[in-house]
Image (tube, rainbow, N blue to C red; front, side, top):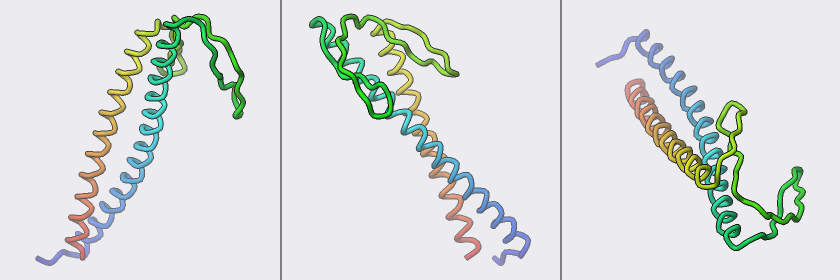
Amino acid sequence: MAISEQETRQMVAEYQEYQRTVESIKEQMAMVRNTLAGCESSISTITALKEAAASGGYESVIPVGSGCFVHAEIRDFSKVIVNVGSGANIEKNVDDALAFLKERKSKLEKMTQDLNESFERIIQNMKRIESLIS
């Protein structure tokens, strides 16, 4: 079956739109991966601090920005300040903070899965178009 010139132009335009969408999804995936890595790091750190706090006060190295750190003694580790979005922070007890972060991690993993599925679907559509206009 021959494809008309108009149909070819429409397919090329559709293909180009898919290319833009693929780039957008790649950017979103990178942001979600970074956020997920930060979430996993927070969970690990809070878990380690919780375990260390159970044995009493202890020392740690705290980042203060620009690659600088200070030695600090942590005497109380009963509350965590958690960013809940839109620049809002809430103080939570350690277990609630961990539960919140684990739920966030789960949502980010689902988001990653959804983006991967969309990416694969678009790539298949692009391959279909390539086979039709080749």
